[in-house]
Length: 118
Image 1 (cartoon, one colour):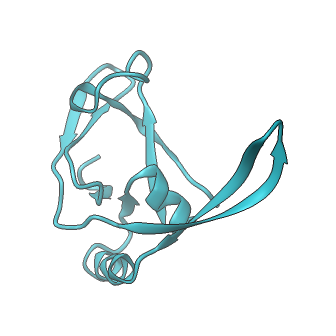
Image 2 (cartoon, rainbow, N blue to C red):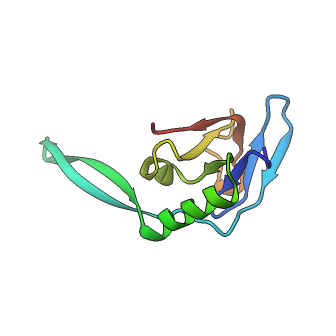
């Protein structure tokens, strides 16, 4: 996994493969930050139901361009928000079975699947 991805989450990622082996991927200097915009879709029972859309900040666009230039062919793993802001370019983690609600320091992700918002 280390050779296949660039970790742009800002923290270490712990993957678990289908044999239960643990693979740790250290953070890089990249953190793909986003901004959001929300629109009220409708109100129901006095509650605003909103649609929130995430967009990359300029520095994140520049960081992603650098990642692609320096690490061609590698998958870029970021936060779930970064994956939404860069659909089809940045991917997010799929929690490993049994670690879905674990605290971030104890969390593990599946080594053979990533989330995409294509």
